[in-house]
Length: 412
Image (cartoon, rainbow, N blue to C red; front, side):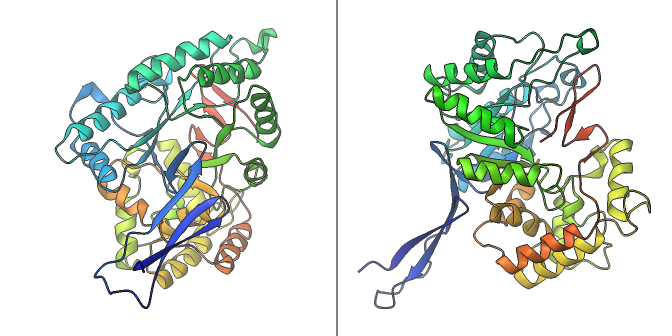
């Protein structure tokens, strides 16, 4: 009789595989490692991903931190990395130039890890197509996909997503505001049928648009695998929760960016060193550094953290963080782990950013356990009682994007 029995449990479309000991089997020193993953289209991915938008591509210099991160991910069975053609650390990227820099960096790091003695190449990479006024045909999607395919150095992209609805309309004031969302969907279908991509997804689509896209692609025989949206404990309003619910109904996996609400849900803005226990001190030190925040971002985050007595009640997010700390201490986890685990419990995959192996490993601490239903309800009640929701800071918004000539908005 085998020493262990594998018992899979399906929780909101998430597989958490538990390992139970057979009392009559011979004892072994160490049980098999728990598996914590979800189906994503034809893929099987870890229930915590890794965002790459903050990865440095400056001058092509070696980056030991990122090299170690990818190596650690490989040693844990391979990571799930999310990138995009528009990602890059150079200022020119924000103005529509230098696209593809982060894609090239991701490919280089994964290739280096695969070629290293004892290395692995099991990592999964998702990238994104960015709508623009010059992209108005199915062929424009195919050509962009082929370029991403070349930069990533793969025969077929694991997950190819549309980054946002077609909102970039610099000539809108002259009446030129025709949208090409359906054209882009046909472009995704063409990429899928040509074998350029294994799965297709969208980003920042609300319940109505994701339903329309799902139906449109289905008529072409293409399953919609994912929808990436901003979602966190304090980012459930403004249509995010309704979008998640609709995606769960459709079988479309939600990928959640801003899972920490830009650091607010790690406790680093609200907890003093005297109040932190050791694990949360570590989590705080591993969270995204304020040194890279613009002055506008810092001002907004401070307002969320402590309140302004106007739009944000005095105390800001602190009451919720205190509750998260209590749960974290009871669970032997960190505040960051609680923030990520909450999202997993809701049926989504959080995509926190990480720039070092230590950050990546800390994020993975949200795996292999689940909050109870009572803890989820307690967290949601405390978040609702704050009296505000998070929609980004500075020029980084959950419902808008800086597109060179200004900010363009969408709504879920």
